[in-house]
Length: 151
Image (cartoon, rainbow, N blue to C red; front, top):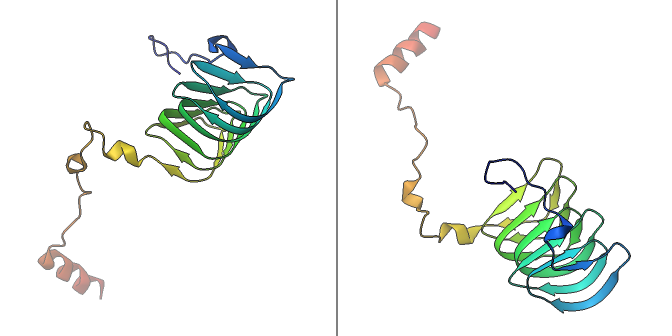
């Protein structure tokens, strides 16, 4: 993440309102508010409209629906994030990601499909804004002369 000065700001466990520590193991379905940081192990289903942080030691085996997902550890499962997904260099995601914004840092691993199609429907984006790549139309006189000279 970038600070106001444009410097990279490390997402820390301190941001989290709830923390699953390194020795915590949880199996089940969890719905939460605010920010949750998992530094231990979680298996099941995670749902929130807020932020999920998987710390470097965190291991998550779950389908996730969240506002924002920040991955520094390992996530196995599909992710639907309404705001964004960030995968840092130590992060690994094994599953499909559906989000309007996806950031993958150099060294990160993502094995699955990514879908950012909601971005296309965003009012600030228009397919008509995209300009086609320029194509060279051959000038028949120039091309025919080159062919004759090459014979």
